[in-house]
Image 1 (cartoon, rainbow, N blue to C red):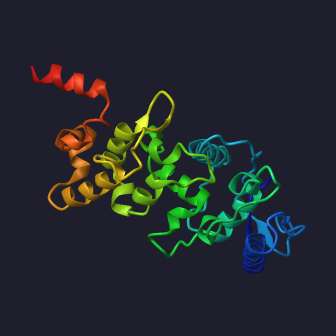
Image 2: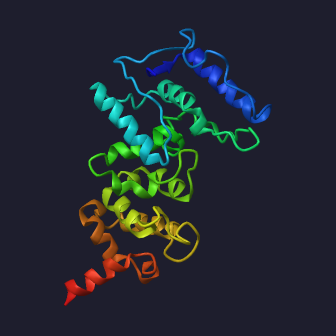
Image 3: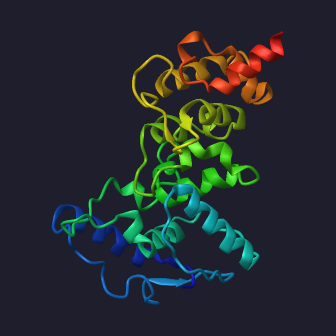
Length: 251
C-alpha cells in the first residue's frame, strides 16, 4: 500500500464510524472507500510504500514503520493527526481486532485519532505513541522495551503511568532503569506484581522518580546511578545479576 492522510471530511467520517462501531454495531465494517477514496484522503508526499504485516509487539510495529520511512528516504509526519488516523484505519484489524464473536471493542477516541494538543493524552494513540517512544530511543530501542513489549491494542499500567509524563518518558536513564527493573528478559513480559500497588512496583517508582528529579539531574545519573539509590523495597524487582555485579565491584 501507499501511505495517505485523511482530509477533514475523511477524519470526520472515521470518527463517526468509531462512534457507531462503539455504540450501535460492534460488527460494523468501515465505510467503503474511506481508506483510499480521493474524496476523503490524499497520497502522502513524499511517497512511502509498505506492506502491512502482523505485529507481535508495539516494538515490531515501530521498527517496521521506521524501516519503511528510512527505505523511502523520508521522515514520518509525526505531528499530523490526519496521517495517524488514516494509518489506524489501514491497520484497523490490529489496532481494533475482531474477537471470537466477530465484535470489535472500541476504546476511547484518543486510541485511534491522536490528541496532539493534549500533552497527557497524545501518547494514548496506539500507533503514534508507540512510534514516538521508539523514535526517541531509535539508536538503542531496547531501552524502551517496558513500554513497547505489549501488543498494539493494549496500553497497560506502565503506559499510563510513564508514557503520559513527558519528563519521564523522554529520559533514557529513567526508562532504562524501569525496563531493567520490571521486564522479565526471558519471557519479555512484566514481572509478577510489577504493575500493582506492591512495594517497589511501578506506581512507587514513578512517584520516587518525580521526587528525585527535583534534586538530581536523573539523565546524568544513568541507569546504574538510579538503581543504586533505590530503597530496599525495590530489591525484589532488581535483577540478581545486578546485585552480584555490585557485590564484586564493592569488594
